[in-house]
Image (cartoon, rainbow, N blue to C red; front, side, top):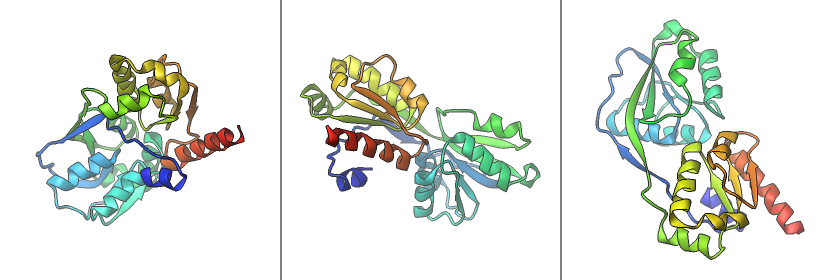
Length: 227
């Protein structure tokens, strides 16, 4: 994302709102027909504790799929969207009688992947391989940038990080700065998680992926240039 923004002449301040803590438990992969990953962190967590790379891996989106390929997984399929797209892809490519599916997940998940596939006859086991803990507070750099009006756009990739930002901005006393900032969210759920904050504008990507989020940013930048 930083590279994409730099190519557009936009400077970026990266503010991590989640701290990833990996678990050391090695999942039992016997009888598993395929692995399901709803985040790049899930891929990373699985790769840390298992050398298995031959099982087919179904990723929720292109970024998660790219991480899987970079870590050596041989057969990777991307749903190119959200959890509903992943459910559709799995139901299209696999059969319930083909074997157990393993969801490499964090301690908190969005949506009900196990339930959705279970209703289609699939046996899915959710394996918690990491925890994503909220950051304790905004960094000094972020608070200063917000307080001085240096931020024009804020990009949110998930409902959880959007909600955490809202909480931490309120706690830091920089919530009023959002009145001059355009919030760009990857989904309506992420936008809703921002709560009642007053922003200059609130925009939502047409699809829940990074290219669509960047396309929404491009439109906002074009409008800004036209003045």
